[in-house]
Image (cartoon, helix red, strand yellow):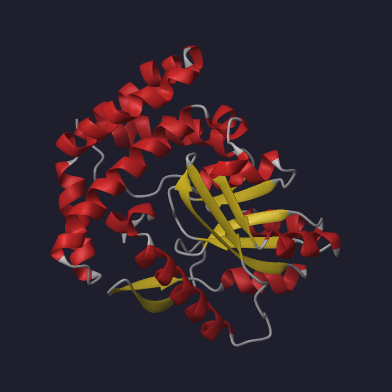
Amino acid sequence: MSIKDVCWLLYLYPGWAFARTFPRLLSGLQPVGEFLARRLAKGEQKRLTERLQLAGFGEMEIDSIVKRYLDRAVGRALCDLDLESVTQRLKPSNIHIQGLEYLQSAQESGQGIILISGHFFASRLAKSWLRSSGFSVLSVRHPAPPDPSLGVLGERYLQGRYIRFLNKAIGEEVLIDDPECTLKIVRRLRAGGLVNVHIDAPFASKTQDIIFLGKTHSFSSSVFRIAELAGAAVIPFWFSGDHRDLRIVFEAPLDLGMDKAEELARVIRRLETQVIDKPYDYELWIML
């Protein structure tokens, strides 16, 4: 049994019960969680350090990034325990929204919208804010993403329990192993709905290799073909921070008339810029 197995066991059972019983005390647990993460997550810190070195970050930067990354991971995990309540308590002064008019304009025209984004820690909070603002979002998600930190207990039981827990936090979702995944996405879009796809997690077999953060990674342009099929707009959707300082940016809809490979490469370069700007906010470092 790995350290992460133990952490998940405590998180999913006494942690969840504590959050339901004493929701306003959750923020007080963050310093404790950060302290434990820095001392117990040695394997994750080593892999993260190596990945940051490969991406070209300097030695002096890396120590700070690793600490902030762990802090963000702990904060996101605590937020997930009571996401709806945390969203309701967000203060206007703590939320900074840019480009919302692009989303509103596409909706007013009756178009479906694919929101493309990356795996940043603020993802679930940003979408929870969207739901609370009247924008219902269907999330495309991997049912059981690979995790090198898991032990036998985690792989056989706890990961499944964690996925079911996340389903309650995320809300509407479609899993990439669902035989009707694409069909469900198209139906949602043709009905004028919103679908969120993380562009750094390809959900199609046909992919394109692109250098990303110092390493070749496979990305899928299928999202553009689905958008064309459904007559939907594709809007880049970026977010960072946490409940104390949540920043959300919507960019102008992409030009789907461009070459798909070129458009995908442009989006990935934009994603890379976002990651380099706030590396401690990016969740997938040790998975890439």
